[in-house]
Length: 48
Length: 379
Image 1 (tube, each protein chain N blue to C red):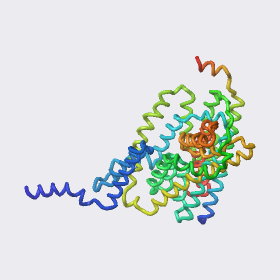
Image 2 (image 1 turned 180 degrees about the vertical axis):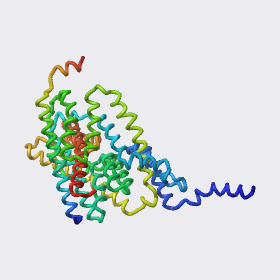
Image 3 (image 1 turned 60 degrees about the vertical axis):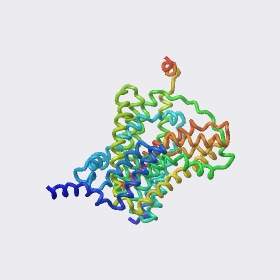
Image 4 (image 1 turned 120 degrees about the horizontal axis):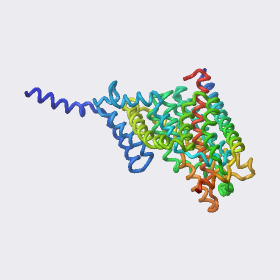
């Protein structure tokens, strides 16, 4: 494989893959927050 | 008796008589690193042991990097095996608070844009004639994350480890000088003045505990070769958030990290032998490292501009600069810059979200790169 095929492949899949994984993680965070929403009592127990 | 005395004296003169110009230059270089760490406060925890290691390894006849030398032992045990950077990742995870990111998960994409410098620099390194795996090791300086840079370069181009590490840690400490001019250049006066609303989305403890577990599983499935990196950071964070292993958390962020930082710094310094370090390619690596961080910042700000456009002007593009891993330094830079143009603009919390995303982003970018290389049958 020549260096430019290597370089552009790593760069394009690398940038796209990083963006995709982090986008997936943002969706997972939103999902977690929906399933386990913050409840006021946590704040109250924290104050105690 | 006389000959014994002469032989004994000869033993004392052997060191100075074997001192070469290159070693003198490297001892001065090590001293410069000590100066930067001690007097200027540039990443002293790393630059001090690196600088001292560089001095030690260039003392003629000391043999610290020979087969049974003490620095060789540290290097083989912790760097060649990749154990030292991984242990530091546990400490980083235990010290990092991902709450700002969890409160504002849309910002996470800025943590991806802030890593693009890695891949663009890889292309530049190839253009300058570096080998494929050398280009990978140089590009990773753009992760702006010392342990990641050490992990990847020790895996693919150990002969560049010293240059890559020194570049990564030096430029990280220079972020307050490197980033502002790029931020100013790429944003308009109107964009700089954008006031971002307060995001008040408290996060439950369950979410905070599940976050490291979910990230580990999801990211490792996509990029399995990065599992050691992702897993160690998230293990540390899980220990922090669960609240039931205080001793382990405390040890990870203090004793373990401190001991490993010392040994890692010495090991990196030990690779700075004159014959291996005093080369044109070292200067090229240092130059490309700077370009990598400039490109990270530029792409981050440009991505911030895109988000600004898509949200109808609700996002200040300056926070894009914080999508790198230099935490929390980069977020502070964004806050200071924003305040220069609008006293009513408080970007710190938003920039902290982007900065936390940058910390995950750098590890994910490295993980993705490792898996892509494996997929291509390289490395």
